[in-house]
Length: 400
Image 1 (cartoon, rainbow, N blue to C red):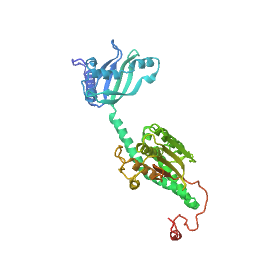
Image 2: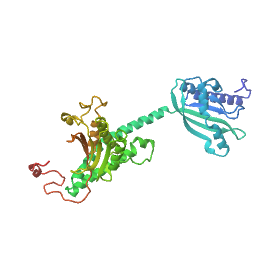
Image 3: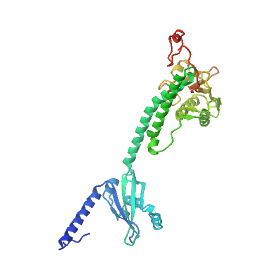
Image 4: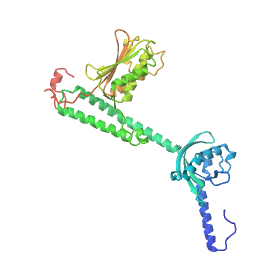
């Protein structure tokens, strides 16, 4: 690069020494940085050719990487092809005046010598020569695997934290809905407190969706996840999926409200679990019925009825216990967690899940969920205090 003779001009000698020091510093920098620096000669007689590749390439990919010898190494061929991908079209657009093609940033995948595929980021810039035409493609290549792993861990943490907040909030929300549904006789001040608690829960859930959801971390500005569903549509969606396994499956809705406030995925999971059990534990071809309707005690209920042999009486009380499997489950694979999970989800919503044998044969599982009463002014009974606590008269009458 430089002549070995020592110039007689002291100033020229000093400048040459300084230039050599700069070159050495640059060489050391490129040799020890984790980014892979590379250069492609665009004006050579044989077309675009990789003319420089920093030593970091050997450390990252685990193979000998020397610019100008890519034809002797299949790994180098793959690397050069990836760096030059899309170059002809890029140069054409640049020649047509599209300056957005001057500097590009893209992602790709490259295999190491041991076969492990790495995610990489490739940044490149087209430099013009003295004639004003593209002469050099200069760039860096970075391993973005650690960055992606960090994002995955961030999403996992956000998901865990969001779940830990949502569980108690859902319990509070379900309890408030149940109080509103059963508290039509409460005074206005008490019902106002219920609404304030419900609004506070809404605000906290909105904050979780805005700041702690994994989706939010990946896409700023995404709308809040739905927290309600049309119960009739939910029932029909579950039935449509179930008919692929049991043709003799019917679904019916009777006076269901237009919208049900709940976690849609959670309620879908509950109904899927109940229907799955009905299909697995009843003979092929037997009928299964799904019914959604207003409950006599208020709220709504979803019923899943089958026409199988029913449950032994001594197992009905244990069917929702964690890991419990009935005496008829020996030939059916499972973990005993499905019904336990379904009940947990329903109870978080302030509802209940129960099972009973019906007289004509078969089993009926019932999901009951509260529906908030329509707000309207009504006075509390005389024997109820302003904060809705029971008085001594209540206990004397044996009410609970």
